[in-house]
Length: 184
Image (cartoon, rainbow, N blue to C red):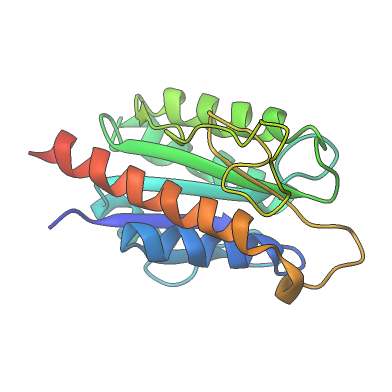
């Protein structure tokens, strides 16, 4: 069976909801980064054993949160030995505005995956970009590089749109399918 881990930081709970949806779709184990930028006990072991690592961070000031960056910097230990080489990687993010420079965050995650000599997986989802499109449609935010969601700054995690969460779930399913093919 393919082992998949979702390593993520969530500042206000929105990225946690995305991580849960991604993990549901992928059949993955959650590895939350805490408020101090640390992994839980056995977090590194879970990532080392995974066939695929899906990374998530809110987009703050055009990139990942400092807590996620602390994790990324600490991943230099497996980088040095190329322990994660040829693992499948993917990423997701959320911000308060429709654009919010989320693509910069996904580029950061992609670059981190490439530093680890990983194999990147995009959404595989067509954007909802017709005149009849509704904000709650699948991939309404229109990302190919990784899953994106938008949550107004005054909204609670419970108010996240089902379309964004379904996009995250479908994205997790795609990563799991690709990881199974790579592992075979």
